[in-house]
Length: 489
Image (cartoon, rainbow, N blue to C red; front, side, top):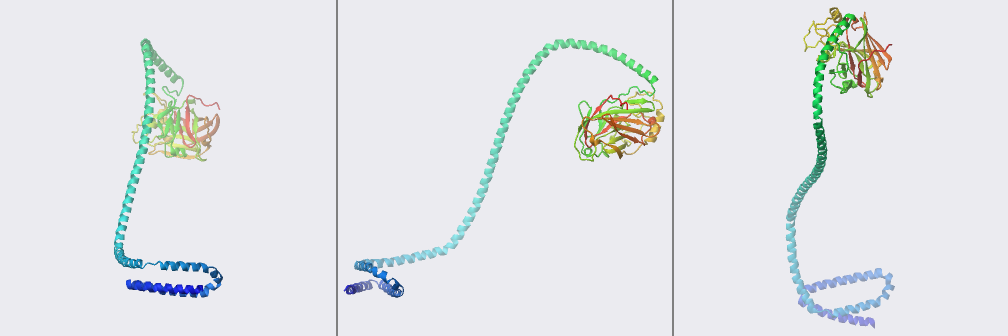
């Protein structure tokens, strides 16, 4: 019965649908065609659904029976909705559909026009973007430069502000110091004004004392001349007017040598001398300002001096230390030579001895009649020197003049690299009567070397000798000790 009712209702719905289709066919053939297509699609969908139900839903038939009531309810709702369909509304929708079709065609035409113009607009936009990126990069660089300049300017301003603050503090300190100095000067001026009267009295007394000293000086000079004349007659070999060394000579030195204010300490700073190289250069050269005092008897004189090690430095083994010896020329003769060459004999370094020969000074003319300083340094003009002619002949034979200077090294037995600060070095020179000379070195009173120089002039050919020191290797600074006598042994 229910199926019959459903079929009857279905026939009624079909009748209504036929009426609606007739009305729609009259209003719009297109709409009927679309509806027919929709019906066909619905029929096809129904057929596909039926096939699917036959094939797939058999397994779920039990569930479908349970949901049958719900489907019936849905069918009644559909029937009610179909009964509520308004034909006028459908006609109005058809009219709107035509309008919408025209609008869609318009929109499609506009979209096509936009699509045709899009590549050109896109290329233009890309060019504008590239130019904008370039401008942005340039602007970024410009702003970065400005920021760097601002940072540098800020740091410069802060530094200048700090410097100005420090300068103001220094100026304030200077003002305080100037004020204190002004107060001190004011006190001193007041004291000086008070002492002015006393100074006037003292100057008067000094004038009187100066007159008395001038008179006494003339008497003392006369007495000294008388004493020197008597000594010359009494002691053979006495040379009046000789000034023995007291310090180092200010100008007879190497370019790297510096002296203390009292001229008794010599310090060497040369690079070559510091490595132990003394041949071919004058680095580290220090010469006493006068000859050594002679000890002994005529024909057997000895010259002696002492130096004290004031400073040493660490050097690799094999560079040696300082050199000590004697020169035949005086300090004035050595300083006047263009290359500061001299005839001398030295020992030291890394167990070595050295013979130095002076070349002829091209800047000074040779005077055969001039008396060498070795015979009588400081002697007055016209003073008689015994056997000077014979001595000069012997000296020229032993040391003939040379066109160029020479420094010659050979082996010895004393390594001066082991010297320490405070060591006293005594150097003794004695010319033999027949052949050569002997140089003896003692350290702290202990004899460490006796060196023979067979090519040195004999005792008859020489007179006074000048102390020579070469600062090299570990020996950096020495102090000259004047007025000392050789030890008894």
